[in-house]
Length: 290
Image 1 (tube, one colour):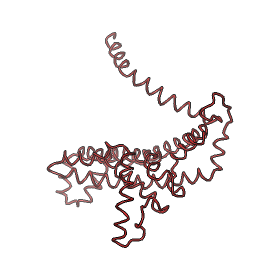
Image 2 (cartoon, rainbow, N blue to C red):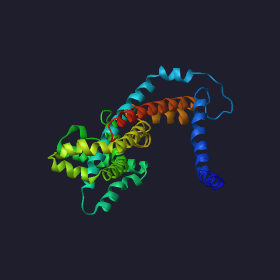
Image 3 (cartoon, helix red, strand yellow):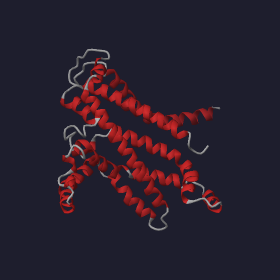
């Protein structure tokens, strides 16, 4: 009895540093942020007043906030669709390789090791120096200038850059999921005359549901909280066409000194992510292997 108690105590002590760090830098920070969202704190003054739901009511009546939510929704939708489709295609292709599989995986994972700001600066030069000459050569008017300068194409361009980097990790997760599928099932499917599509639909897809859920939740969270790419490439422009909620939070907090308002926006963002993730997990749990 004493030995079990000591063993459990040892395990607890090993986890204690992580628990303390998580509590201080995440749980406590979230609690304090929610508290400040009900105040008029400007981020500098030591004095502030509690104003109830005034910040949330002001956001509800703020057309810029609503527009930012719409832009963020479009951004997240395109990002999720692009990442999920491309990463699954890449995973199926890489998993079927017989040679140089490790090297190829490393090449595809390389973008994930570069910072988002660095990637954005590289792609900004590509958009400015490479796209216009191609557009002139092909006589495509939409490509005569950088897509980042056009309100209609700027958001798509930013999403493309994000997808280019974000597809790496989901691809590896999908590959791990594909390698967990029993090969006997594929063999049985071939013997029964199942087509490639039917083998994917009835064998591969159900086994991939846990990894699909993980990748979907990560992609949703990444899309809704995106900031680096849009801020570095466009700063929210042109004409606020890429003004995602992350940029609005940053501007309210560090330029307009409305830290309480920025905290209220962050709380709303947190609720949106939690609800969407919960719905996705519920939907995905119905289609997996039981």
